[in-house]
Image (tube, rainbow, N blue to C red; front, side, top):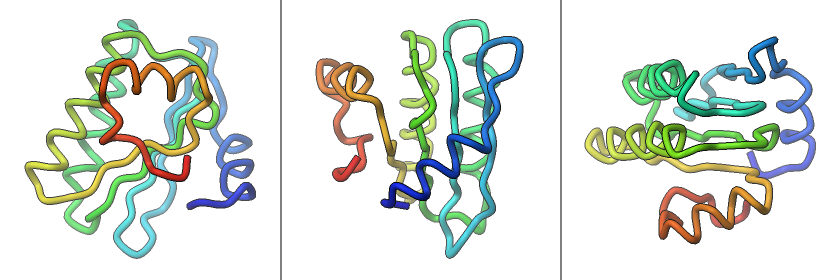
Length: 123
């Protein structure tokens, strides 16, 4: 999940709907549950985001959750809370949870919030 081709493929295959966001699940491969987010996430869709992430965390065949944010342009505090809730649930279940392909302004936000444990070290 570290290649430019993966990033471009996911961004193309996660459409943003009329509400300004999209959530898709890539097929589970070798224990990795991949959730691809695109658009803007805020209080209007945080419950849906939380549910999608927790569904992936709860999948018995998944031991690592990779959240692709290449197409994500905005996260408010409720969306960050959804990501943190899923991260904590993954830790409680003994699973890895990492955010991938963040745009620079979103990466900086997680750094300011001292939430770098969620970030994949290579992007």
